[in-house]
Image (tube, rainbow, N blue to C red; front, side):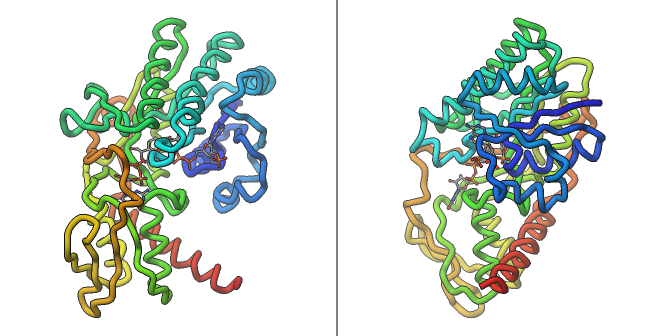
Length: 343
Ligand code: NAP
Ligand code: G4F
């Protein structure tokens, strides 16, 4: 029986991947740094929490990683655990580097010593392209990270390649562009938007406050992307792959799509931090801009070229942005209704 160890099991991707692998007949060992019941809400919502064997694993602690791998003998390890919020990496750059750069190295060292036949997936990111040098970005595009998070992930990306070339370990990096879902963390902009718009739909009058509305991202659906992660570990040879949709939209457009879902049209007025979004019919203020949510250095535009993954893995995205916004809005409206009932 195939046995997968997933770090970051309680995160967005960890939960979707656990469900996918369990459906494929895998035994899943779910690793996270804390074992608090409420943290596995995503696994519970997907109906697989009881099938996951939960264990403690902190990416900061080598002896912990080493003994977990030695004891459980996984056939595949998916390293999804990370300090994954770019904005926080400016406040906690050293912690971010320790978890996101040295964390994967700790796992690779344990694999090298315990059993080099264990396959390894590393969660690389389009954030490594940063100040992009060409568009769309593929596996061949030069990296130029713009955040401590991006720099840490780039170290991890290269050490994966190095362990593959030096020790023949089957180690892959998936360079994934932004992927969202109803289970996205509230700190990320898409979920912050859909969650707030859902509240406004149910009567809340507080405007949504955002930072840079002009940044553009290539947003896909997380449930599509985790299938690509799995495929990467089933090939003849380990390699790195971009997963993306090939389309790029601004935060402003994502806001408009979310309000459109509740039949509101946004009219924009002003510039920079003085810009506001109004309800085109009622003139009610829907959106404001605050300096608080701008970053010291921004990634202005990302757009991925997933043709290598399509050709070699047979992978392609199945969910367009309109459908994704709809999934997130529906979920958030229902969840807000549940919360209102509980009060
Ligand atoms: P997420 O929801 O933030 O999940 C990350 C998980 O990592 C959380 O469960 C977190 O646990 C755990 N973690 C944090 N520090 C840890 C540590 N020291 N030891 C062990 N676990 C730790 O992230 P995601 O969106 O699912 O993303 C999964 C991975 O893909 C991450 O590595 C992310 O950087 C990368 N990635 C994501 C995207 C995207 O658009 N979603 C795109 C490219 C790459 P706590 O709950 O305790 O914090
Ligand atoms: O949703 P975000 O925080 O995602 P970001 O920075 O692109 O990072 C995500 O995707 C990466 C892949 O490229 C992952 F590696 C990473 O782990 C994470 O999942 O911000 C998206 C954009 C940024 O340009 C930000 O400046 O939205 C802009 N933004 C504008 N207002 C905001 C806000 N972001 C957040 N979080 N909150 C705002 O109020």
